[in-house]
Image (tube, rainbow, N blue to C red; front, side):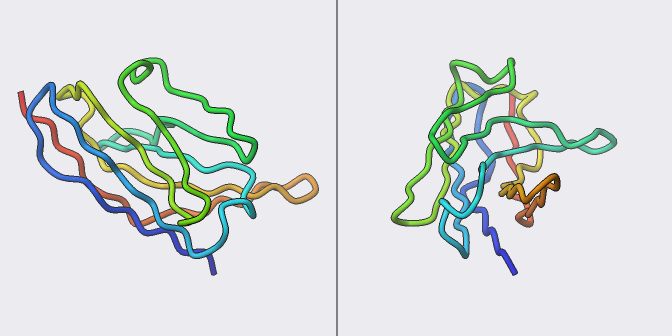
Length: 119
């Protein structure tokens, strides 16, 4: 069973920075993509950033230029560096790992870590 363990969340003032970490129980190369999603009460989980096995990245429009996703394959860890944080970034952040097999996709999720940005 794939395990993803997030850390690094917390309370920060607007304009501050946080770095989230996601440690995977399997080698990152075994996944087609890794990503970060976030969710606030009453809303659907939304994509924040992804990094594919080959290294290409994708960001949600509102975080472009402020957030950076990266991976350390030797440590089986994915990071999300969040700078210039805004109150609207407040959410529970979830790490995701995705595998594709034939025509199916398999998603694995961490338990989530709370990020709170005060104004």
